[in-house]
Length: 92
Image 1 (tube, helix red, strand yellow):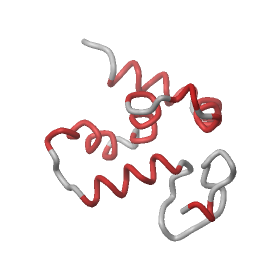
Image 2 (image 1 turned 90 degrees about the vertical axis):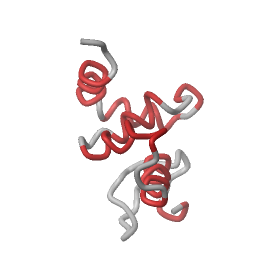
Image 3 (image 1 turned 30 degrees about the vertical axis):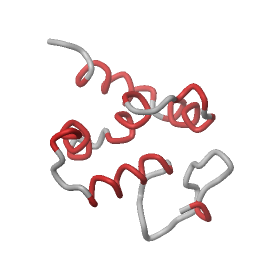
C-alpha cells in the first residue's frame, strides 16, 4: 500500500485494493476481513456498516496528535467527526 501513499500515509493514488484515503483505515479493513466477528471488536464491525470506520480508527483507536495525517482527516471530515461523537460516543 505504501506506493499509493504520500509522506503522511494518506492514500493519494488510485488502486484496486481500497477506496479509503488512509493507511490505518486500510489496515483495519484488512484486519476485520481476516478476523470476522471477533467479539472484542464488535463496535469496529458496526462502524464499517455505518461508514464510520475512519472516525473509529482516528478518534477511538489512534494516538492522533502524533501524526499529520490526522490533521488531514480532521480538516476534511469536520461534520462527520461531529456526528460520530454525537451518535456513537455519547450516552443517551
